[in-house]
Length: 204
Picture (tube, rainbow, N blue to C red):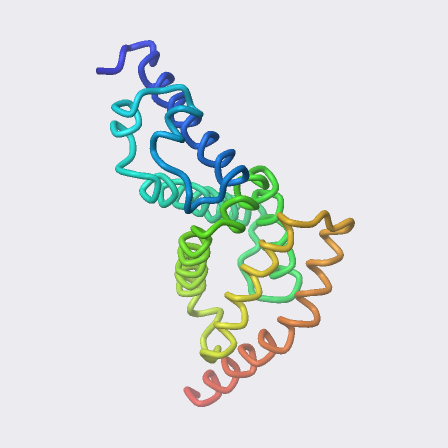
């Protein structure tokens, strides 16, 4: 049971952090496929029983790590956008969303880089894809008329940019985001606006 001063909660957080760091280090050393729970507990200097108090196996651990990354990313993007009141769909806002996301990704850059590069990358990519689609669904009024191919293009493009960001060191991220939005998203945004305009005219 947690103490009133939060000592037990802090101990749990430290243990989980040690386990996660151990997994990431082992992925870089040996690859995800060859890692066992014993490898993780030895690296983290904890007992197997302690590991199983928190995770079922290495797949459960990876799954929860990916959940935390995705949750943090989209919560903070949404929080920052609400603060800046950038909720309209245009190329400037699209570029700003990308810039904010990259700032957040950079705070966990090594974790993203390692998880993207290992055989568990499907887990992270799947969760990102699902959440991006959900985010697009939350602004249906702004994206009404967008076709399935365009959705797939946007989702794949965002994940591709994230992979590139964590495995390279772009020198001018803001300019890259503005260029990408202008070249690759402007036509999609223009088409959505035209669809909305036609829909309004049909209702008159």
